[in-house]
Image (cartoon, rainbow, N blue to C red):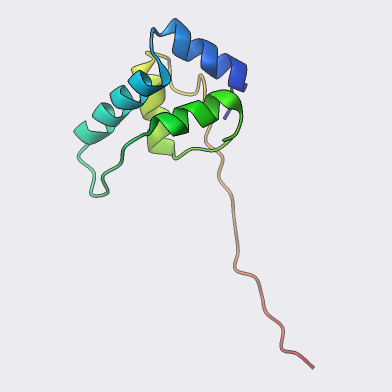
Length: 93
């Protein structure tokens, strides 16, 4: 998450949402997407972001949260790409 947990919680409050209300709105936005993999958002996810217990979130959820709060893309979240290569196993001698 690009924003601090305090900034995220303030954005939720400023947007006029409770954690459960924002989760419901985000789930509605995600259901409207025509994707093969359905997705939703729980109030626990929102709470964990606001309390600092979660630092990462699925990009689709992040985008839907920013849309629900009427914020420009990238205001709260940034996309980080990780290049993870498979670990090379060496035969035991």
